[in-house]
Image (cartoon, rainbow, N blue to C red; front, top):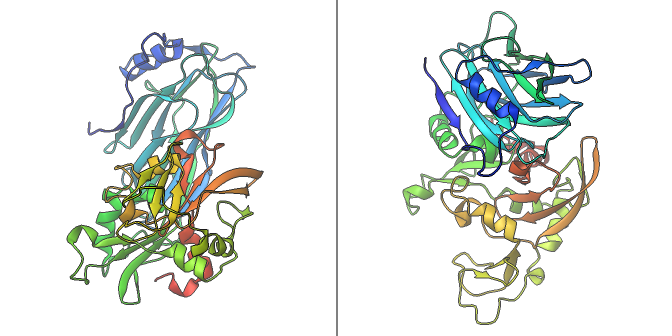
Length: 406
């Protein structure tokens, strides 16, 4: 059996006895039947994919969430997901939601089985509908029959939703996958595709850039590919750049802002647009450097960080980056080439906005614009997704469709 361990977050915390579910799951993971009894009629739960169906191009990526819905408090959950490895490849599996004690994330690529288990400790047991796992798949080949991804409720290692010391699972609904040739491929087979794909894979760009919005193209002499959250550019023709600076994220925020594009930022509707950012990014809105500042960056008493608006970080007026954004842009797993190269200089202060996201209206979030991205802080998001890159690439494609690529 060929398996790949995608993630493991350790054992129960010292001093916090694991609930019955965790012991049951551990036994199940070792191949023993889990000692949980059938659910009473009132304690039912569902596990399903969101969305329930997707359309993708051959060679394209798509992402879905695995969601638990339960009336009772959930102590933990284990899901066993079956997919056709001849047609689908698991690209990533990232825990989300309130079950924060992650026991197992393992993918058997040869058999087409993904196993995930997580629980809650300390009595903080969620109920209602909540996300469990975010999955990204690649459609490797076009199927000749309808393609489905199953959540297995009946097997030796089976899906379990533990509530009140019972397996409350009542229904596990599948994911339907269809082929849509009009969807964007991840990378075309010609041109600079292999170079972009290598960078995309190494840098976990499904999270950082999202899905592709077009094939590779050339703009102002620079090969590029546009994605939901940004534009990846190949500057290898510039001999003055060192090899590690060959690939860059495009200055989309600058372009959208300078054009005064009236699209909302951070949601389907927002009190901030790119046109608004132009005023907030004006030179007169920059703040003076702290007393005694000699260059680079300065940590302020509240944990925020002053950054001068100069390419070499020499003393000059600039902007203050919120502590949580500063911590995020300094994550080496997300921005291995450093925040200045991957994110760029801040061009506004942190700004508050009211946004609509689907049925959720009037959510209060914090936005801060940088040269190469916009960061959003939404406290109602799951913790792993509280801070995100805004969909500046999608907005760019909407504002400038002629610059979308092939």
